[in-house]
Image 1: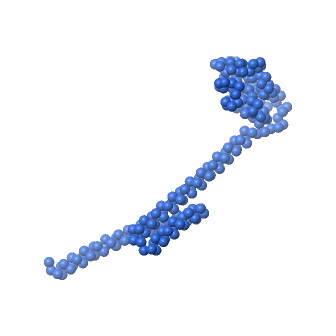
Image 2: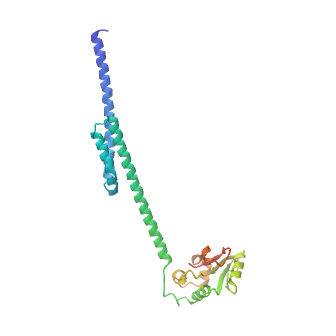
Image 3: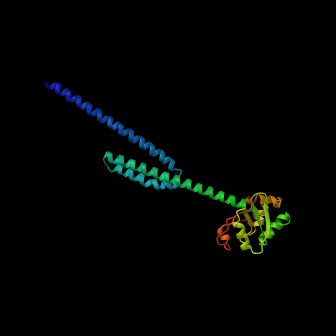
Length: 236
């Protein structure tokens, strides 16, 4: 091959190599520019989170130091990527922490609202509904209990002579739906639950809709019964 032809071929190879290197550099510039824009965007978002800004600064300074110390290009790229990854993790943690705190606040607010509705204390309720007041006096004194049946016989107010044996027998009766009574541990149940919900309703209405006023008694309210009664209901 002539020297001129060989020089032209070498020149073309050199140009092709330079074009390939230029393309590689352009690709890396685009990648680093994209990472820089992402970091700037994340930095602006972290500005609204004081804790995040404080935590992110060491990573940013560390990456800047490694840039200034003349590390190879691949090391600088990994350093920038590491900072970007760490900052995004911290930002995600701050978002999750903020979301959990808001959820906890809403949950506490809902619980407080429910309690305030349940315990609507009315100290002036006595004397406004005499039949209901008399029924509650008998129940709270454990002088009687309301036994609710299935079928045509709606309910019966039973005088208690031997409460333990009588209530246990009613609980075992398959025709009995519920046993309504009271518990001394539920203080002010008439003022906070029974009367505020019933108002001027009749005794028949309260017994027919007993699930609104009487709840299943938990085990700690049935220490006299072993095992606890399944149909025993009290106002609490």
